[in-house]
Length: 151
Image 1 (tube, rainbow, N blue to C red):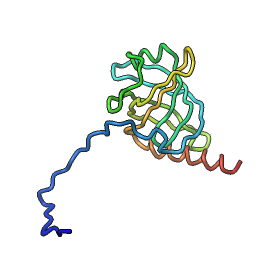
Image 2: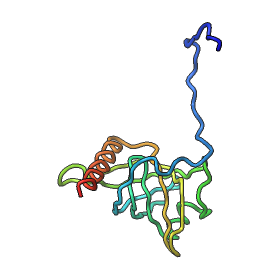
Image 3: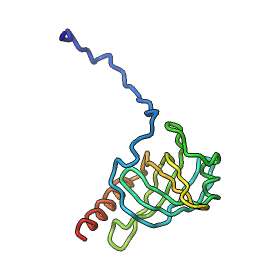
Image 4: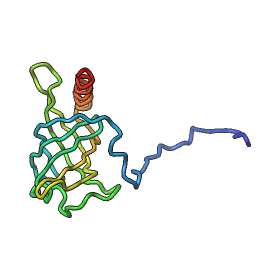
């Protein structure tokens, strides 16, 4: 094997990686079953309320009806890998004692499946949190996971 004679990093440029063209692992974080309302806003400004099914540190699975799906995914087909649908979500988690905290996050719809005639499940990955949103979700999920291990 040959050896590199010199490695110069003074001229190295920052490289932006493109998203992988295949579906990411949809189960890369432990999920906890939760049920609460979540507000979803599309890039066009449509606002709707759905219900969460489960939550992880990297995303949330929500349940929507056909009318909501038509607003969120006009084609009513699961997004193609790399062509995810950007949305903004807002929800509350009870991290602080006696006072829930709000979490607002920019997200991408990465998965859709029909589970009943008028019920669809959407897999949503968090891409960026406002403020301490990630810390709140992390603490809430950790608390629920710890509680499930003691039962």
